[in-house]
Image (cartoon, rainbow, N blue to C red; front, side):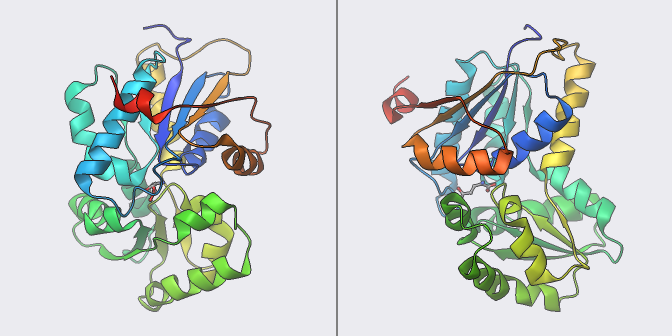
Length: 272
Ligand code: DGL
């Protein structure tokens, strides 16, 4: 394995960019390859079997790009497919659930934590199980917020409708007196502002991007795999459907022009 090989990131759509942002902030010289499965987003309402199948296809696609490490920048895929991936991958894989849970426990003062995510992540109790495993005394209140993913994909970031949806979803968590809210879907940090407004400024919002980025850094340092080039890393993006909307939102969110963006045919993912 070469230090200059890219780090692979995968999400159902644009959500994983929130993790890319955290990683590239601390590791700007790393080359990265991102795959967003925009033809099949959202994953959050799909069965575990379907999500596992799509995740394995995405991982194989990224492996063909010679990645040195895989970041499953999707909570839904992390909660159902991480074990399967670990069975066949010879490179390390970093998921979202453990870093996000640890961060929530570091931040909560009262031990009352809210978790919002897709139907799949919440239905699988991915975070409540992990948080309680790490600290059984914590009270965890969970809520699926499926409409947030299409709103983020559409770029309705600071929008009246998004504000109303956030209020409708989050009032019941606010009433539980949570002091920390885990954004347990990588799309949600894109809607950070509206979510913060709906729960009030005293609730600390956390997501897996920052702690996952630290794990990536530790891993690369530990294995001597950090890219020591002093050039800014190359960033390549692949999507499985029309790239234009992805490009528009990604450029707003990352605050940078995206120059290497390609469409992948679904056949390329499904026929190996
Ligand atoms: N961004 C994803 C997550 O973290 C998936 C959202 C979806 O496709 O429903 O769960």
